[in-house]
Each structure stands twice: as C-alpha cells, then as structure tokens.
Image (cartoon, rainbow, N blue to C red; front, side, top):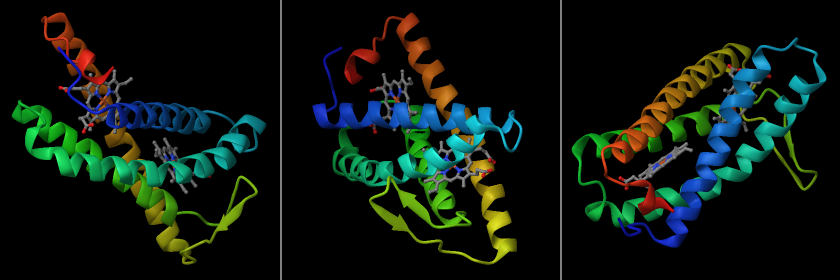
Length: 162
Ligand code: HEM
Ligand code: HEM
C-alpha cells in the first residue's frame, strides 16, 4: 500500500508513538519503585517537562487530522479507535498539566505555573490522569494489535505510515 499520510503526519505519528510509549512504560514502571528511588524521582521530574513540550506537536497533529478527516479511515471501527486515541491522549495531557502540585521548570528555560492549589482537586485530577493513562494504554495495545492483525491478513497498513 502506498503512503496515505503526508510526510509531516507520518513524522508526527511516530513522535506521538515514541512519547506515549515512553511516558506510559516509564510512568507505570516508576510506580513499582520506592517513592524515594533516584530513578523514580528522575522520571517524575523529567516526564512532565518532556510531555509538556509534546503538547503543541500533538495539537498540530490534531489540526492536520481534522483537515484531512473526510478521506481517512475506510473502516468504521478504525475511525472510532483513531478518534478515541486522539480524545484520550488529549484527556491525559490536560489532566497531567492540571494535576501539577508545583511549578514545572521547563528544561531551565521557563516555568509552567501551578494552576490548581486545592489538594482535593489535585487528588481527583491525579485519579483521572491515572484512569486516562490506563485507557490510553489499552487503546494503544488494541491499535498495535490491529496493525499486526491486518499485516498478517495481507493488508499492509504499516506501509501507509512509513
Ligand atoms: C503523553 C502523555 C502522558 C502520558 C502517557 C502520561 C503517563 C503517566 C503515567 C503512566 C503515570 C503514572 C500513573 C500514576 O502516577 O498514577 C503518570 C503520572 C504523572 N504524570 Fe503523566 N503522562 C502524560 C503527560 C503528563 C503531563 C503533560 C504532565 C504534566 C505537565 C504529567 C504529570 C504527571 C504527574 C505529576 C504524575 C504523578 C507522578 C507522581 O506520582 O509524582 N503527565 N503519567
Ligand atoms: C509502535 C506503536 C504504533 C504502531 C506500530 C502504529 C501503527 C500505525 C499505522 C500502521 C497506522 C496507519 C493505519 C491505517 O492507515 O489504516 C496508524 C495510524 C494511526 N495511529 Fe498509530 N501506531 C503506533 C502507535 C500509536 C500511538 C501511541 C498512537 C496514539 C496517539 C497512535 C495513533 C494513531 C492514529 C490516531 C492513527 C490514524 C491516522 C492519523 O490520524 O494520523 N498510534 N498507526
């Protein structure tokens, strides 16, 4: 199958894949470590910075998808899963930014302020971030399995994204 997505959309897709797989595996992996383990502290400091930098790239991706929507996704189920991937990723990013209980120093360049100060709301947002991250992990697994399944059935959808 020839590429169906523009080079820019393909690049942004793989950037999202890298960022989401990294933040999911390292974020959940860190929970298995002691609260004061140096690796866990590093993940908790590094991830909010790198995922915040990712937000404009993800927004850009949403705009490109929006503009092209009419010609994408020949299958209805793929359409639903792709929209859900966008929606749940958006929910993960928004709850992530809102749940910060301290200002985030962005790679020593500038500071993202703490937006919410109420501890009950911070706890609620952490719960929502956690739930949205689990939903995203499930959707991404489904998505990758669907790509593999299509491939094994002779529909080389991967070629459209390479
Ligand atoms: C690509 C998007 C993101 C993914 C996949 C992701 C994933 C995760 C995961 C799996 C966890 C561990 C679950 C938990 O602690 O309940 C987590 C925790 C967290 N995330 Fe995210 N996250 C993303 C974006 C963000 C953003 C944009 C921010 C803030 C700017 C953020 C801030 C946090 C914080 C503060 C924690 C809690 C760490 C702690 O316990 O101290 N995340 N994230
Ligand atoms: C390593 C993991 C991944 C692989 C192998 C992969 C593979 C692919 C392939 C082959 C397509 C084209 C499908 C088609 O045209 O029918 C696609 C599309 C898509 N993928 Fe992934 N993907 C991965 C990770 C992700 C992640 C983490 C997201 C989360 C946002 C994601 C979101 C999407 C979306 C929304 C589309 C629809 C096209 C678009 O709107 O850009 N993918 N993926």
